Image 1 (cartoon, rainbow, N blue to C red):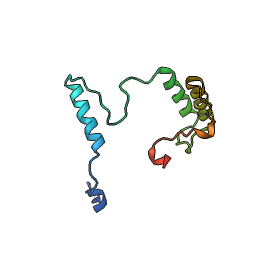
Image 2 (cartoon, rainbow, N blue to C red):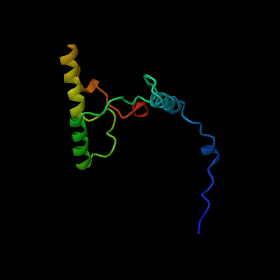
Image 3 (spheres, rainbow, N blue to C red):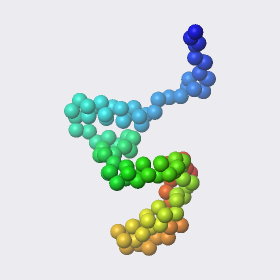
Image 4 (cartoon, rainbow, N blue to C red):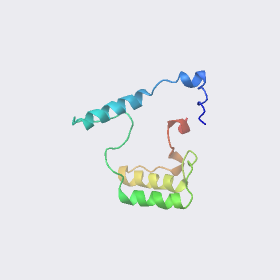
Length: 108
């Protein structure tokens, strides 16, 4: 027995396609056609993630770290960023001045 899917709400029917994803799809189509394209739409890198980062992600997932961290970010990461900023640019930055979030909505 098959059932028809529930009808979508008026709100859902009025959602427009994402312009960002449309531009990204166009860039990928041009690349697939052999064009030399720099896609800036989705913010997705054009290189593979380094293996040591993949390994760290796997270890984190296996240890249960599967949820977004609260903005301003986890303390060890904020400390590492502050230290790196000091060593790379010569500016002393307190970890309390560093914010790491999974996206703009969380930062707002």
